[in-house]
Image (cartoon, rainbow, N blue to C red; front, side, top):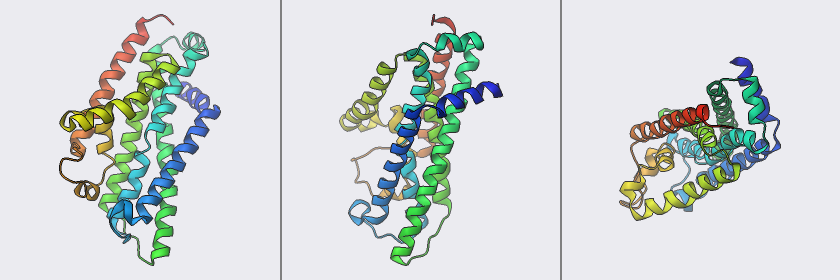
Length: 254
C-alpha cells in the first residue's frame, strides 16, 4: 500500500495543473487573510493581535477549500480522461486499494496546503503586529481554527476523489461541482437558510467561521450549523459518497 500511495503522490505532484491550482489557492488565502486583518471595512474592528484575530486569518485557508476539491477531482478523473485507468487497475487489480491510495494522497496534499497556508498567515499576522505595534496572542480559538481547517481540507480531498470516481468525466465532474458549490448551494441558502445549512459545502464552511465572526452576522442573514454538527454532517456526506464510489468502481467497466 505504501508503494501505491507513493505512486499516487508522484502522479499528483508531477502534473503542472496541481502546482498552478495550489498557487492560486495560496494567493487567494493571502489576499483574503490580508483583507480581514488590515481592512476595518471588512472586519468592522481594529486589529488587536488577539487570539480571535488570528483565528479569523487562519480560517481563510479553509475558506479556499474549493482548490483542494478541484485537485482531488483531477487526481481521479485524469486517469479516465487520458485512458490510464485500465493500466492502473491492471498493475493493482484491487480497485478499492487504488481509490484508497488516491484518497490518502489527496489527504496528504490537503495537509501540505494547510501548512503552506499557515506560513502565509504567520507572515500576515506578523506584519500586522509590526505595523500596528501590537502584540500577538495565540490561544484556544486559533488552535481550533487550525484543526478545523485541517480536518475540513482532508475531508474535502476525500470527497473530491470519491466524486471523481463516481462521475469519471473530468469536464462533467468539474462543471457539476463548481455549479453546485457556487450556484446551487448559494441559491438554496438564500431561499431557505434552514435547508441550506445542511448542504455539504455550506456545512463545511461552518467549520471555517470563527465564534467572533458568527456573532457579527445579523440575525437571519446567514444560518450556520454549530461546528460539531457541521463536521458530523460533512463526514456523513463523505462516508456515503465514498462507499457508493467504491461499490460502483468495483462493479463498472472501465
